[in-house]
Length: 73
Image (cartoon, rainbow, N blue to C red; front, top):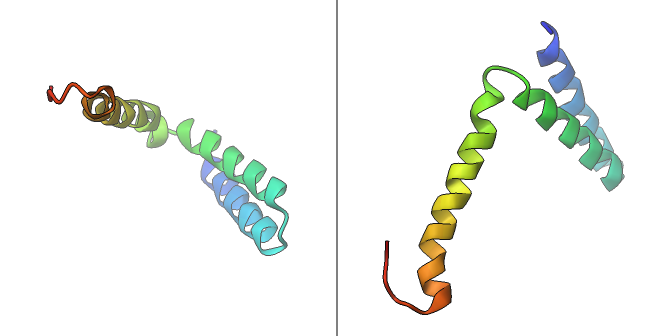
């Protein structure tokens, strides 16, 4: 799909217009559409893996503090 960049641009513009018009539901829908389109591109294909790695690292860092063990690692 060669025009995915144009679709992402229009989804972001739609989200901004909805946010300015104080229509939060529309802004969220347009933002989610832009995110899905971005992840479907080769540039955004690594985003889900990067988010999963970040959350895993955050979980590994927070678990000792939350369980009270005091041990790191």
